[in-house]
Image 1 (cartoon, one colour):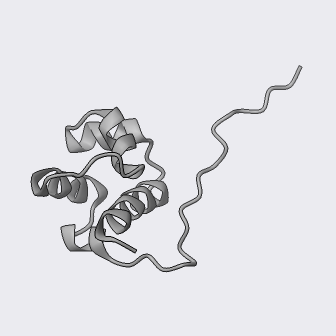
Image 2: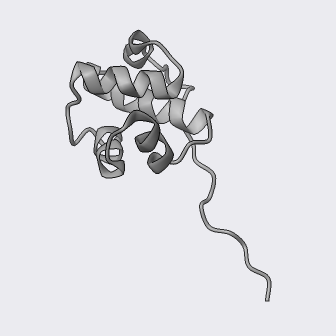
Image 3: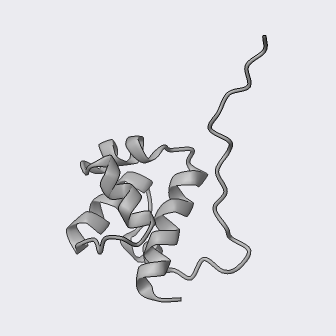
Length: 86
């Protein structure tokens, strides 16, 4: 796994564990919501300053974003749609 893959996966993993939306994380880190999406999809390479803001917003150390999450630590998201009863 490359460093870019680790960072992308860990951003998403920490975000999902805390129940944060991409928008909420973006607001806390003072970055654009679409940038969070692009980071998680590895479409962007963040600067150290952005990684520092993300780590602070996620309540972790910047080094944690480079950890190998391992094969069993797959971030899963709850279904975003609400069931409607008619």
